[in-house]
Image (tube, rainbow, N blue to C red):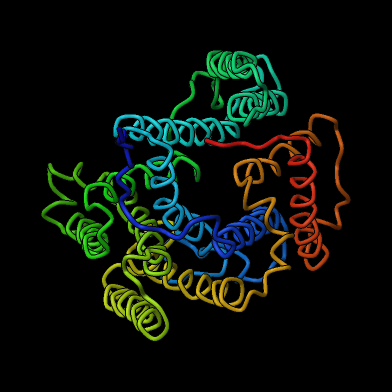
Length: 406
């Protein structure tokens, strides 16, 4: 007698290439390296204009203004792999939604704490800013570290301690000059903005079932939503509240641009290869640049105001950078050099918060760097060296099994 067993095969949204994509990891690692550099060089006096953020009303963007969009773009490139990986592991629909919501909450909490750190009133809080910040980052590591204990309850004990510490720090926090302010989202911080865009993009990706045309349409809808909300009949009326999500819509558009490019390169059902792939990617680039150019006279290019022209130009730049990396790393197999960026690419959250940890630790210990490192060329060179040092430090922390995952 022959017995037949039915095996539940997870329904994938897209048929993606298996395994880690080195070019995406390298792109993520390079972006984080540049982020550390530009954040540190922002405190250096006498730096050239191209190393500074363009002013809000300047109608321009600099090299620095592309770093945040690059983060959003990479988030988008990773979403199809992350969601399909969860489905392949057997996650149900609701398990997947909970995972997405949990990651979003994590990013919002991190952004909220980081934004409020600089407003902390030490007298009212009863704790120095540096100590409060160090305890916060310690709690982050406890909550989001990937533990390797055979007994799961040990890991949950560490996570529980971290959560309790976060709640305590939120409870004692007092901010502002008068010390009467609690933790509040004046804005959500970089991580928080990424969190909102990630949430919206995940919802859209599932709603359109990974269809590239649907994603392209949603990019257009995000841009159109911004344009409509800028019209006087919305902006200057009792319905102005409708425009409260314009910034998130533009950030989501950047994430969706990265998501769409990921499908072009790695969705095997699309089967885009050779000249077909080049024409599709080139066409996407041209559409973004033409749209950016057409919208610029009306809305300008501004990172601060999160305008469509800034978003589309940044996404187009990211498309070019990634395409070059893909050709070198995945096509030509020139990839040995990527080993330097892999630790940061595989542990992006720790790499992101590590410079802040070092900064507050130096303050707590009363250590000051030589004044020469905060001016002109020496400051720029030090910022570059500092960024490289952070990547080496992350590599060492990886060996100690400190790896954060939302």
